Length: 243
Length: 52
Figure 1 (cartoon, chains in turn red, orange):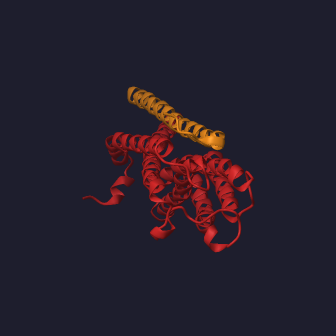
Figure 2: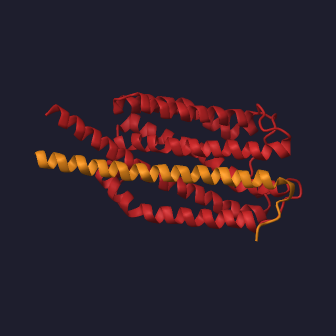
Figure 3: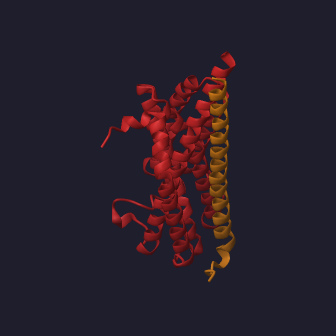
């Protein structure tokens, strides 16, 4: 078993992605299809929420991935700042649009669920607000990468932005616990089984979460490979211009 | 086959519709860009090899 740092070599990383991506993508599609069909077609209505409980299979996994995508970007950014591995900076860049889309899905499905349940599309509740700020951080992060021509400078500045934004990623997760106010209920999933949703909703939810995690991994691998190739193309074009 | 969604049908269906659309868009854009970038890189590498 080799060291994880071997994958800092772009060639090695691309070769590994070529090998594992079909399996990860296939598993992601399978889990999502099974989880969503199970949740949508074969679970009952909730006695309080009615059929809106089916939104949980999209809302909870996307919210989870919105936060975890930023955390993955944080780790990759720290690796860049400390060890200067380009692949890790490019992996953080590749993950940002995926995390942003997850955040949009969480915000949209939350609003659509909130309208009939809370009587409002939106409230300046701690969790909702920190999620909206997290989304703005995603947009800022993507814009900053696009705005700076030099890849290393862009990686440095976006890494710093990522560290700052992590405060909101953590707040998005724990806001309901920090402040006993706002509309958003506590976590739907917990290590404490008493706090979980009922089993009939819980099992398809776990499959959907696995599907979202695998989809995230597949997309990040694919997009990181793309970023590595785009960087190599830019380097070759620059060398060509100089000769 | 379609489950009975009652008065919340619109909320549930729009949640699924929008989410799946966004996910499909993200996957589509990622795959298309991946192919385009791979093609561009191949072309540049061949040109560099040809021109020494």
